[in-house]
Image (tube, rainbow, N blue to C red; front, side, top):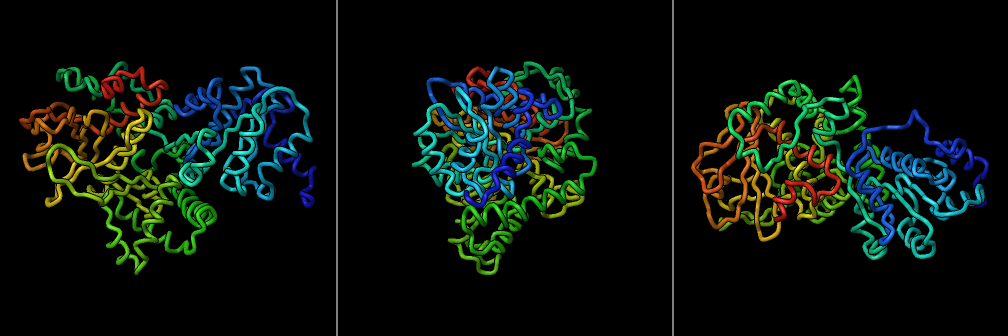
Length: 494
């Protein structure tokens, strides 16, 4: 503390907190579109009977800071005095020399305030011993609330369970869903009161009416497959430059900087090689022993440890196998998805994803998994998984498990005239009366490929275009902050 120039810190604080001078949130920083996590955070923050600090977890450039600013704007609108609100980012070079205690001490020398204080700490993982200091702050000062962000979440939960238990809640912020992408660009499909689980009961005319609403969105969907759900990339006029910046952020800032610092990685080059390997093989079943051989002898133990770090940093999803019905399934080996296709496209410097149908299928499968896994998180279900026959090259890409062992199946066939045969696993499982499968979906490419499949099964297989499925899932998430009141979740959980 002796080496810190308090005047310089005061200048930085005032730059970060312009509302101190006006008691108003700056109009030029206001963003009206709010993501579901904003409402979830506000509800928890205003919950009087159950106090919790909040930590918003998500990768860089996903919009964590925007949500902090929206919460601050809302608090000021509701009458919280602006000087009772402190926002700082520990990414700032000067503030990196401080810890949480130092920041609060300096803030309280600048202002003497009454009432509850709200501290917003961006990129909290960049400051020393943050979890211990948050624990003490929670225990010793009951008239304080904290909302923080971290690019490497799991450090915020898994690595510090004892400190965080009963003190803070981690909220995960994924990249934008396709529905949010459309809202971001003010694209409106005017799709009202459409429930995913009711589609199989619609007649052909109704399905044609729904699919016709998406014709104008097809070019936007193709762009979404390329640049993913990063707000900055969506608003950019130059996708090539945007991808370059994203690649630099992921490799230079996350892998070489965040993960190296937080997890004390001894060999960041090995992490880079593994992440590149995962990008190439995204959506495939992952074998650590095979990866070890192909990565010039990086040990299996190191690979498994690095996978955990990458998942904690929100860079990958790990989908584990699950049982469906009485079929013998592959056990133990996960499927790995890079968390957003934009990352994979940027790292591999893919110029035209539409030239290779196989690569395009991987991208769509990744997005289907991402959207459905978000559904699982919101409905407090186990994370999405997959099912594969142990001795045959047949699988169901995504399985949702919920209570009473009921299951939903999703198979991605993103190609023209998609169909499944009796030898496909989704058909076998849909024929099995003992499988407890409630719904089976075949995710297709063409807007005309929409309706109940011709396969004779006990559970009908419903074909749904990927663009429609992802839009409906994102819309469901965005417009229903209380998921217990959502018809889809009521059916899912009943």
